Image 1 (cartoon, one colour):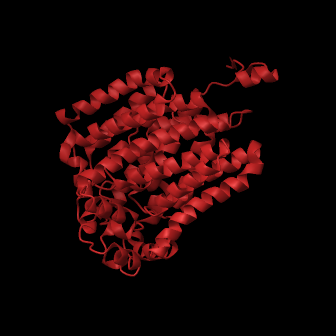
Image 2 (cartoon, one colour):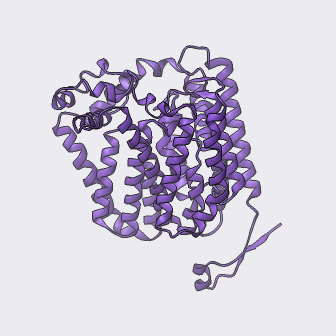
Image 3 (tube, rainbow, N blue to C red):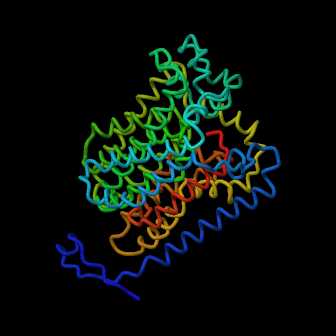
Length: 452
C-alpha cells in the first residue's frame, strides 16, 4: 500500500506535489534479519571453530570470554536505559537545537558509566591500568624526545597496545603524568569525554549534511549504543572523539565555506592520526561526504577546502616528524609486527566474512541495522540521498577496513570511531528500537567478561 508524503518546504517552493512513498517497514525487517544472520553466524562459527584455538578470542568474535555476571549491579543501567528510551525521543524533538548535541554527549557518557560500573567502579580504570596499556609504560619514560626519536626502531620492546598505535597515546599519558594528572583515572575521564564528544559531533555533522530533523531523530540512538560496553573504558573512544570532531568540523567548514574551520579540522584529524593508524580509514567518511556535497553544489570550493584541511593535518604530522617520528615508517613497522604475531595466527576468512561484521553488528545494535536498510532504500527516491550520506560513507569505510584486514579481531573496540557515524541512520525516535538497543547492551554486559 502506498502513502502520501506531505511536501516539504523545499518541495512546496518548487511546486512539487506530495508524492507516494512506500512503507519503510519491509526495509527495516530486511535490515534486522541481516543483523540476526550475521550475529548468529559469527557466534556459531566462532564458538565451534575459533574460541578454543588459542587466538585470544574465547568469546569469538569478541575479545574476552563468556561468563554470566548479571545481578543487582545492573539495576542502574536498566533504569537509565528505560528512562532514556522512554523520554529521550521527546527531549531530542523539543529541546533547543544548541542543547541537543550536548545532551546527547552527556547521555552517552552516563549510559557508558552505568554499564561499566555494573561490575564495580573499578571497571572504569582497570582496563587502562594493565601491563599492555599506555599509562604504565608512559610512567617509565624519562626523555620524551628520545622516546619519539626511537619509537619505530624500538617498537618490538613495547607493550602490545603501544606497538599497535602511533606514539600519540603514550605522549598523552606522559603529559598528564608530568602535569600531576597521572594514573588511569584521568585517562578514563578523557576516554569517556571522547565518547560523548563523538556522539555530539556526529549530530552536528548530520545537521550540516541532512538537516536538523534527521539529527534530532538519531540523537537518542547515539545515547543508547551497545558499543558503550567497550567505550567504557578504552582509549579508542577518545580516538573516536578526535575523528568525529575533526570530521564534523571539516563538513561544517565545507558547507559554510570557512577556511579557518577547515584548517582546525585538519589539525584535529592529524592528532587522530598520531593516536591511531586506523583513523586514516575513518577519514573516508568526511571525504566521501565532501565529494558528494561538492558534486551537488559546492564544486568550486572543494579544492580550497581540501587544501586547508590538508594543511592542518600536514602541520601536525610534520611536527611529529620534527620530533623524530615518521607516521609512514611507524605504520610499516606496526604492520610488520602485527603480521609476524597475532595477525598471522587469527583466522582471516572467519573474521573477514562474519567475525568482524558480527562484532560491529553487536556494537551498533539492531536499530542501526534497520536504519541502514531504510536509508539505502530511501536513496532510490529523489532528494533522499542526504539522510544516508554519512552512514553510507561510514559503511564504505568499514568495508575497506574489513577487506584489507587491517584488524583481525578486537574490532568491537578498534572500530569504535565508526560507530557514531553508522548510528546516524538509526530510528532513535522510536521507543521500540531504543528498547532493543538497551536489551542488547545489557545482555552483553551481563554475559561477556571483556578486558575493556
